Length: 302
Image (cartoon, rainbow, N blue to C red; front, side, top):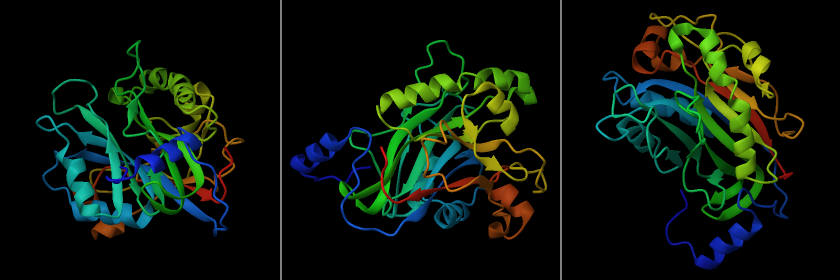
C-alpha cells in the first residue's frame, strides 16, 4: 500500500499520468521477467498445522506478485493472511478483500489476497484495495476481485519507472463436488469480469485472472474468450502429497496480442521439497501447487 507521508503534489502528478498505470520513464533499464501467479493455500488461517515460514519461503523464492485463494474467514477477520504478510516481512505488501465470499460469517467463507514485492511492484494510482466484480445476477459462488498494479524499476511508493502495468484478478471457482458442468456454467461468466476489469482501467490492454478455476484449460477456453497460459502436469495433490492429473490452477490472459509482455506458458511449480517431503508439504502448506507465469518488464506499452 502507498507509504504514508507522500506529498500531495507527487500524488496528484502520479494520478494525472494515469488512473491505472504510469508512462515509461526516460532512463534505460535492464528488462527482467516479473513472476506472477496464484496459489490456493488450503484453508489459510484455519489449519493448525500450517507452516507460515514455509509459505513465506515459497512466495519469496518464486513470486513477485501472487494471488492467494482460500484465505479463510476467522472470527470476523483473516488471521492467516495477516500472519503470512508478517512472515514475508517489510519487503512485501498486499491487498486483501474487504469482505468474505460467500458474504456469510461461516468458516467456509473466503477472502482473496494479492501480495507483491515492494521493490518491483506498486498499486496503480488511485487503487487502494481489491475490488469485487459486481455480481448482480449472483452467478458466482465467490466472484473474482481485482486491482491494477504497476511493475518496473526502483519502485518505492510513488517513485520508480513503470515497465509493465496490468489488471489482475484473483479467482476461486465453485467446486460443486467435482461437477464440471456446474463449474463451467460459472466460469462462462468470466468474459463479463474481464470486460469490467478493462472498463475499470480504460486503455489498459493487460488483463489477467489467476487462481483455482477447478477446470482444465480446454473447458475454460470453450466458454471464455481468453487464453489460458498454463501448461504441464497436475496442480493438485493426493492425501499423501502425490501429484494428481488435475491441472486446474491457471493464469488467464484476456488478449495475448495485447499482452506482448507474456514470456511463455505458465507452469506449475513443484515446491514440495521445500517442506522436506511430499507429505509434509501436503500437511503444512496445501493440497495445491502454485502456478507461475512470466511477464517481461521493459517499457510500458499502454
